[in-house]
Length: 246
Image (cartoon, rainbow, N blue to C red; front, side, top):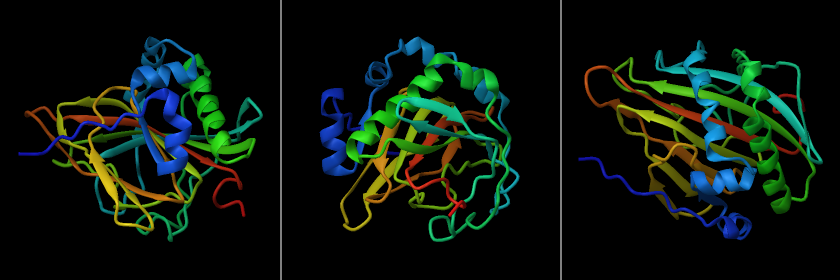
C-alpha cells in the first residue's frame, strides 16, 4: 500500500510570507489562476501540447520514459521576451547524473507560448519572486515533461534529491493518468526538516527557494495494463543569468 499525503496548500494571501519564512509553498489550482489573473479553464488550453513532446535522448540511466520540450525567456520589469533557443546546461555539483552536458531539447511550440495563460503565468511568478528577492530581471527556463511507464517504471527525478542551481523553482502538475507513486518530497538543505505529499490536482504548484530547499519526486508505476504518465511544467528563475553563461 502506498501512502498518499495531501498537499499542504498555502492560502494565496499568505504566499509571500510563507515562501519567505519556510522556503516553499504549495498553491491550489484555483489560487494559481487567481494569482495569474486568468480563468482556470485557460490553463487547460495548454494541455494538448504535452502530447507533442519529444523523447529525451540524454538519459544516462538508459531509460526511455521521459519526453520533454525546453525554451528560455527573460522577464524584466513586467515584460516577457523569449530568448534564442539554447541548450539546457547544469553543473555536476547540482546534477551529478546529467550535469556538464549541453542538452539540446526541442523548443516549446509557438502556439503554447502565444497562449495568454503562458505569459501570464511566467510573469506572475516573476512578480512573486521579485517580492522575495529584490530583482527585476529574471532568466527563466521552461521545461515541459512527460514521464511515462513504457519501461515499467518512470523516474521524474532520475538524479535523485537535488537543487537546480537557480534561485526559485516552480513545479506545476499538469496531469496524472493511470499511475501510482509520484510523491513530491521537499527538504531543508541545511536541516533535517522536510515534508512529503502528492500533487494530484491539475495546475496545482510547488514553488520553492532553490538555495534553501532540496526536492525530488518518487518513481511512478502504471495502474492497469495500458500504461500511464505524469505531465508537469517546471519553471526555474535565476537572477544571475542562464547557467553556462558565466
